[in-house]
Image (cartoon, rainbow, N blue to C red; front, side):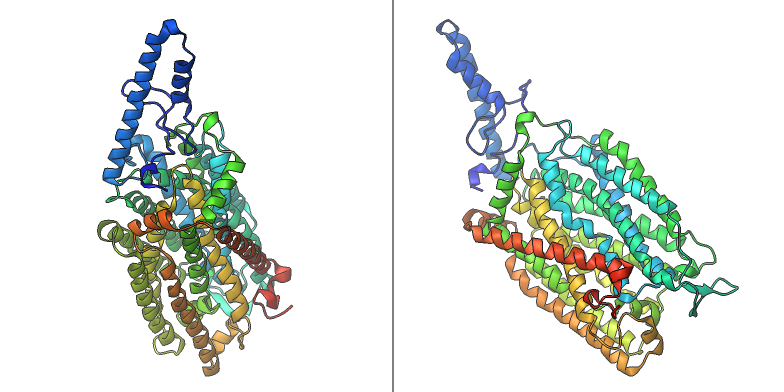
Amino acid sequence: LKPLQLVSAYSLGSDTGAGGMASTKLDDGSAEPALTSVIDKISSAPAENCGKAQEAENYGKAQEADIEDIEVEQKVDGALASGGEVNIWELSNIGFILQYYAVGVIYGGLPSTVYGFFLGYLNVPGYVYATAGVVTSLPWSFKFFFGLMNDCLPIYGYRRKPYMVLGWTMCCAVLIVLATHEMPDPYHCRDADGNLNKHEVCNEEAKWQGGTFASLMCLAALGYVIADVAADGLMVEYARREPEGKRGTTQTTVYLVRTLGSVSSVALVGFGMNGKEYNGTFDWTLSFTQVMGIFAIPAGLMIPASWFLVQEQPIHKAERQSLRRYAAQAWELLTSKAFFFVVMYCFWEPFIGRISTTAGGLVKSEWAGVKNLQNQLFSLVSLFVFSAGLWQVKKRFLNYSWRKMLFGTAVFLNVMDACLAFLTIFDVVRNQYFYLGESILDEIPAAANFVVGTFIIVEMADTGNEGLTYGLLTTISNLGSPFSRAVGNQIFGFFKPDLSDSANYEADTQEFRNIVALSFAISYAFSFISLLFLLLIPNQKAEAQRRKLEWPRKSYYGGVTVALVIVALVYSVTVNFMTMIPETACSRFVGGSGC
């Protein structure tokens, strides 16, 4: 991207009304339709109409002068695209904000049911519980393909709104299926007071029935991810129109709204699904299927809201990207050294850093004695901490070193988390409120990492390929987590006594405590090793733009990236879904004890 080409690919509209202007030139130097038609008329006009031709020529020059003024203005305020800053709080844009609130409801709500339902009601093995949370977020690994659909396959001229409608329709439909699905009996028997008797089993098969529910939750997540990708495409377009000093405001704002959506759904699960069969304390409870039915309501409301309350200008047929051109653009991005370094960070940092022990869930439930309500309440506090982190980044750290921010928060988290974990493992302090402090601390680096990731994506994007850039980088980032979970299941599946067997936690021997502590120590070691990959990312916005301008392109970078994504995607999807299938969940290959 050359300094004077920061706005070379945008379109200011094909019509030229009062105060309007003709379309700008495309990247390849060809003129867009409005200006081309003027030039054609000039060249073909007969001599007797030379007065009109001169008038048209003067008009064209005036529009080119206006475009140059826009370019100068952009260079002054540092915006990466034309059109001026967008007010996302206007009534005409309220559907854009609502997208993120609804996404937050489902994004926070589905995973929040996993602890009570999978570990409490079904009593699945530890590695299956760990994988269930990953499977419900697996669709995020396919964001690139949805971005491709947005950019190359517009529906009735619209690139964003129809996919929002389709995504929410799918999400709502699958949630209704979950709401009407027959529930198995709980794994443990219940006494006369409704309490679970963990020493008596009434439904042995329940622990292998989580796969069906996890798969349906994955499909529901697929729907809202499709809608989210379309909203993210608009978000990047808006963010690129912000002045450099304020660039990042749109991202932090919409993710604050998304976090508020998560707060509401987590509160619902915490108070509504806190029955004793869900590892809770209440005598009454909403069932898992009832909660899914409630989640279907906002998903359904977003179907009309996405069409009528989102402002999007339809594109002309001539502006539609072909798949061939899109693939060429993707390859051009992948061959950039600047983009390659970011890709390597986005994949390896979460992959290495999130290889974690399968003992976490059972330490939480069996040794720390965490109940579902307390778990969700602390999740709520965590979301507020996350929101506060986003706000602080927005107000104080927009121009602070990204590397220092991520390094400092990550070290702080791991040191504090290790203290809480080891004190619980060795029975120095076993208290649910003490142990849950870790979930709050975790949100500090999470907020920093999340916001910095979106900042980097905006800097890497060019006008016209926002969806492509966002899809590629977020696909690769989200791929690291399921890949690390698959590898983590396999690594910690070799530990004996079995880290995923709740009976070992009930026995609570010193030997087993040492094994669990070792597994946690290895997890922290992976997390610290992952910090080395911070050297791959730019330090701030100016360095990101400098890298794009100065660093070379090589086909080697694209080949390595494509191979890495294919291997990681196939491997992680295979292992994680094998963990969800009863016939293969016991396999040692996925972390089981053997079939």
